[in-house]
Length: 517
Image (cartoon, rainbow, N blue to C red; front, side, top):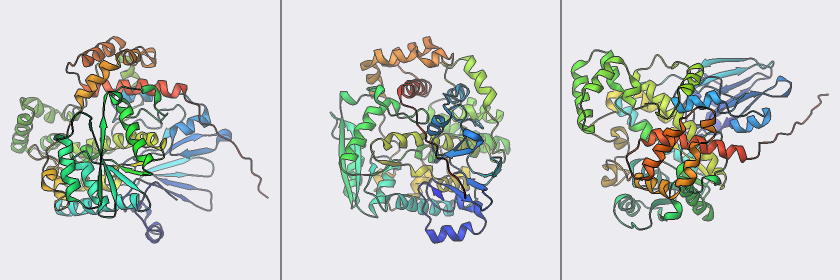
């Protein structure tokens, strides 16, 4: 059984699974897990290396092992509550591995890229089932293009599709690939008072150049500001990254559902996969390439208008946390850090370089949380897909030497090469896309009372966050002052999620007794 979208045909699946099965995990495009059964009642689960289709397990009544693609569903089976240690770890370091746990007590997430064998007595054995490939840059560019073509095809072949058309490189690439197969709707979200320039300008260039692409503008006004109607979110397995912009997302999903569109492609994951931070500087230091390290650190420092010395020092120390910009939020307490330290594990991919390990960890975190976005879309009858988070895409990017895919001088150099001849040059050469920080400031100001109430919520009661810091930061952001959104937003998402699941009905299960004659 293949769970999730997969580009394999029945014939390919049968042929490959009769041979060495581990190659199946990245043989095709898609976000999928493979489950095989044997006459001995042994079950083998081969988990998605990128983690875009997470698989969870728990012990049910009578000791039976039950697996599912939803941790919240399994929590309904065991009557489990939120796992406080997992929650603390997700706030301290969201990319860290938390083996044997999930957001729900008594429910474990199977590690990505593993062959998990479950015997008839419920015992499990695990072994790695994926090792990154190795390719030249030109081979990698060709394979990424072929993989994205297949990824879009396997999701849109039997669907009425739409795609984000933000004018950026990631979403526009998917819309263009889908349009080569047939009609697709491209949706551009924009402020109601702005009808030209920025994202709209580049989206219109794309729509004019690509046949089969129907361009739809979705204007937003004060009713769609971030942090509006946070009480209306559907329950998900864990906090959803789009929580602050839920009203905007819900408006877009209603638009799609009203047009009988049942498949939506997003560019989520593109920034993570193709826009890596300069963690590879630590690899240069480890290999003693000091001249290249100095030159590249200087280039990154100029880009950031900062001194190169902190980058060089971090590279020499092997401090990938600093190089990746993964600094824990000051609002997270020492108690949370202590809980997190007890359950997190060292990176299992020790045979990879610094940059590759960080990329794998970040893709898995982004892919797992993107699964919650799909659960939000499910409430509207729309299947949301994120092809950049497919395991074969990750495998191919890792196959290209890091020095050939990361640059301080060129924006997403690898994806730019992939899209030669596919996108209009102004779009392909665009360095960045529009930002919505101003909307977040205004949204907090408009919803200040309800958002401030989150500061004294369950996270505070569990001693995981400092409510005074959180309240002060909310006030600063509402006043339009600079804040570090990556420190503030995850705390608000987590508190909103806790409130959402507290009032949502539990997932109910029914046992069916069977007799064998």
